[in-house]
Length: 231
Ligand code: SAH
Image 1: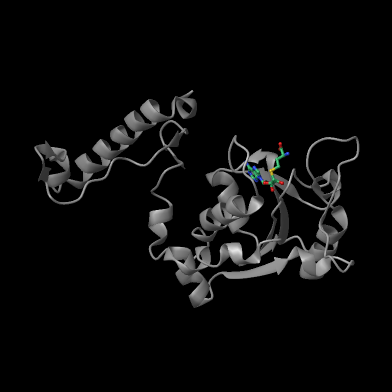
Image 2 (image 1 turned 135 degrees about the vertical axis):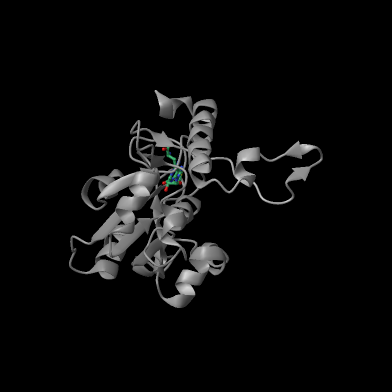
């Protein structure tokens, strides 16, 4: 799958693309990332991407023309397997289900806003969807896009070595209740550290008991940390 990033800060992504699971996937070719400098689609010699908001108010807004032209140049004829996403605090909240959905696209183009945001015609007439990464305001869409790319990229087949590890993790469905579950607590050696022992059952080798314990522990932790998921 290919990610396209449209940004005025192309250098922002360099270290993010080099590390860990997603970094390896880029090197192996399982994921491709193309970074596009929005200023390449400006027409004036100052390469202006922003302008003052109609109606007054603080700060500047991203102009529509360079964004529309960048997306047209990068994606060409729009195909169903390509998704255009505007990073926006006003978007729908990003979650694991959204990450799974996007991981099935062939191309995902992420538009990174800056300043006070982006002319609304981009959200209305260019983007397929607006995505927010949380109920807070960032100073730019790059960090949000990097987060989406990481969560989506690791779900692309072949990126995480063992496909099971992207099934048995936080935000899977509890098969009995149908609710979302967080991952269960996990432990490694030593079996006792500063007097804190790991749960006995994990040392027994009894797979059925361990499965049961993990499910209960995951439910308990979900109820404690995320009562909103249990409602
Ligand atoms: N005036 C806007 C905030 C603009 S912040 C508002 O109040 O909603 C500048 C840019 O940062 C946005 O265009 C968007 O691309 C990005 N951004 C800020 N918060 C974000 C969030 N929670 N999720 C995704 N992108 C965000």
